Length: 136
Image (cartoon, rainbow, N blue to C red; front, side, top):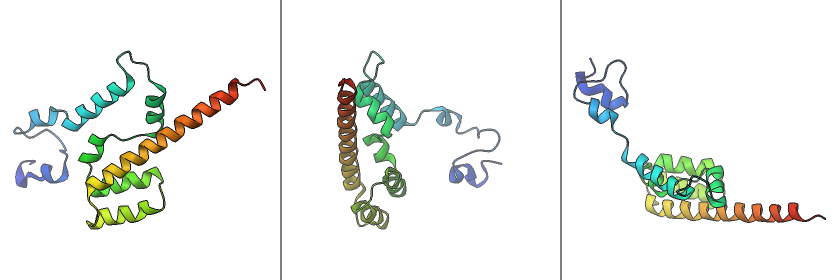
C-alpha cells in the first residue's frame, strides 16, 4: 500500500506500518537536530547550569544558524514574523518569498537582530537587578 506510487515520500508520513525499504532511515536523527543540540549544550556549559545569556536566549526563543539554514524561505519568513519585528522586516520577508532577497542575507540579518535583542534583554535584566538591590 505505502510503496504504491511512493505516496509516503510525498506526504512525509506513513499511516500504518513502515515500508520495508525505509525503516533504518526513519530511525536516523535529522543531522540538523544533532548540530542544534550540540550548540545548545555549548551555550548551557558543561556543568549544566545556564549562564545569564543562555537563559535569556532560551526565554527569547533564539534560533541557531543551523536551524535557519535548513528552513526554507517560507519558514524563514514565518520565523521573522513570529518575532514580531516590524518596519523593514516586512519588505525583507516579502522579498525573500518572492526571491528578490537571498536566504543567506536574511539569515545574517536575523542572527544580528537576535543578538541585539539578547543584549537588550541582558541589559534590562542587569538594570532591574541593580535597582532591586538598592535599598532605596
